[in-house]
Amino acid sequence: MTAPTNLPPADGATPPAPPPARSMGRTALVLGGFVALGPLTIDMYLPALPTIVTELETTEAAVQLTLTGTLVGLALGQLVLGPLSDALGRRRPLLAGTALHVVASLLVVLAPNIAVLGVLRVLQGVGTAAGAVIALAIVRDLYDGRAAATMLSRLFLVIGAAPVLAPTIGGEVLRFTSWRGIFLLLAVYGVVLLAAGGRALRETLPPEGRRPLRVGATLGTYRALLRDRTYLGLVLVAGLAMAALFSYVAGASFVYQGQFGLDQQQFGLFFGAGAVWLIGATQLNPLVLRRFAPAQVLLAATLTGLLAGVVLLVLAATGTGGLLGVALPLWAVLFSAGLALPNAPALALSRHGEAAGSAAALLGAVQFGVGALVSPLVGVLGNDARAMGVVIVVALALGSAVLVLLVKPWQLVAETGAPVAVAH
Image (cartoon, rainbow, N blue to C red; front, side):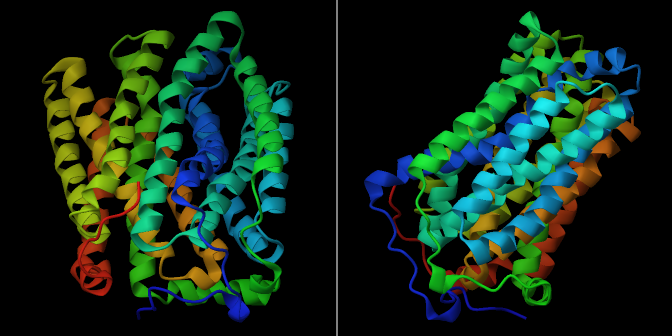
């Protein structure tokens, strides 16, 4: 079953006019600040994972579950906050979720054991879900089609800076304080976001465009979304691409520090160097979209990522190339993810403008839900480069199969027409 690519807002509401091109960068910066809260929360404490194992007298697998808890919170929080933003507007749920994150971060500073840390990480995830889902809904309120993909690419520039900077910042913070200081810094960042968002963000969903907040209506909206074969396929592809990314995030500290002997600061720099490829791809995406349709870029990126994952697995399994034999194909996977991640959501959300918050929520819940399932797998399989390669290959092989068999990107190319120049 397919759906129209452009549906009007609920109740015949007229969406706000897109902001002028000169304000696109400012909008991306503000929204990116909120979305970056999630990657910062996930990544800043990665250099400290081995230290947390020792200090809290627990296991590597248990500490990795705190990462899983954050992803679970992100997934579940989006399912609730997406419909809330469709009913109440975008600003209030965004600011309330960020405030919850601030409170949870402050409590993490006092966490006495791994169980309490795990619970608080779930709450942190719920709080960061507000930025993750509502920023996408705001983009859908203001932009469509290639303009949305271009905006998401600019947004991913800001998002991409978080993985680059987060482990490095975390490693530097550990020079002066313990891992608890990292979470204190996250709380301060959340307070800055609350001040900036309260001042700079306008409401993009007018009252006449809002949907009733009823459980039955919300479930009905999700059922309607899931009946759209193409939307469902795009959501699954986005989730599997995110699974490949999070297998890297979950295992990188143990691979780089445990397997190859890097210290905390070296790990932060190496992890950041890899994320540069993710950023580069997201910024190349608007230029690529001038010549190719988003569906074509998504297909090429997914298949290229799968090929890079196979190379990683072979080199890791045979011990060929040492550190660079692992890092180079990993960077190719990240580059491919940087092309896939803006286009899959843009294509999915363009089909359901009448329920942008719920559509973005389901998309985000699947992305981070799959990430939550995948994160422990790297540890279960051995917390080494070979385990990471296995998870990446399986995820991207499944993503490629879903894209070809369910989404059928050539049909999307026929629907959206030939590429046209986009603002940048």
